[in-house]
Each structure stands twice: as structure tokens, then as C-alpha cells.
Amino acid sequence: MKLKILVLGATMLRFGKPNLWPIIDSLQIFRPDIVIIKAGTNETVGSPRLNWEHINEFEKDYSDYISLIRKINPDCRIVICSPLDMVIQTDGLSSERIADLSGRRPRIWELRKRIKRIARSEQVSFLDLTKPFDGKANLMTESDGVHPNRDGYQYLASLVFDYLLKNKILANTSHIIKSLS
Image (tube, rainbow, N blue to C red):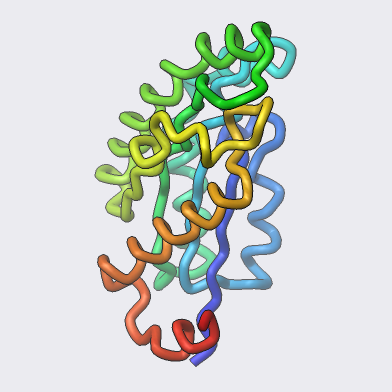
């Protein structure tokens, strides 16, 4: 069995930039068995992108996206993730960056709650990625505070993989584990 997994990350807002909506066409060709979505970080951005100013559209856009995935592959397992926490203690952050992230960070935690509610209402799996990155400056890109560094991406991958195993979303993984060793 060849398992197809797609991991997506960008804004869920149709209005927003960058957004996940253009990828829907690719899903029709790829037809993944598992789709993992991590959206929310770009939603916290205000001017000039104005994503946060359209946050009232977030839940509807997210639900519509899940519906489209289900139309493409009704048997697809969907995991939606909360965004990573913004780590203000990351080395090398400028005072402007600290001010920006300090203003956006509460939005991350609000979106975590919203995404958890979406998961319940849409009956899809929810993976909390906000709490595991809380305060972990060593896992974030220096001078950035938002995007993981190499160790952070490895940690993120292990969180996702462990979640898929624990929740039996990946059933027979012996071939995957062998290829990783």
C-alpha cells in the first residue's frame, strides 16, 4: 500500500496571503489519504496584509476547505493543527520584532481555541502545536521567533508522527519506520 500524506501550512482565509486555496486543484490529482493542515500564524498579521481584519471569516473558510477535501476524497483522514506559539525569547529579535510578536501572540492562542472548535464541529482530528512550542526559543529561527529552525522542524515532525501513530491514523507503519532508520 502506498500512503499519500499532504501537509499544508499557510493562511486559511480565502482573502489572505499566502493562502491554501490554490492547492485544492492539486488535491484532485494527488488525492491524499491523510491531510494535515497547520493554519493560523499568517492570520495574525494585520496591515499591510490585513489578514487579522478578516478573522471573522476564518471558521467558515476553514469548514469550506474541509468540505472540499471531503468531496475530493471522502475517506481522507484530516488532522487540523493549532499554530506554533510565537517565542518572544528567541535570540536576535529586534525591538520592532518583539513588539510585533507581542501584539500577535495572543491571537495565536485565540486561534488555537477556534481551531479546536472547528475540529469538533467538523469531526476531524485536532493536534495542538501551540503548547509544545510555548517558550522553546531553542527551536525557533534566530531573529524570527515564528518559524522553527532545523531542530524545531524535527521536533514538529516527531509531534505529528507520534500523533498519527497514537491516534491510529497511521495503521501499519513498519515500512515507514524501517525507511526512517
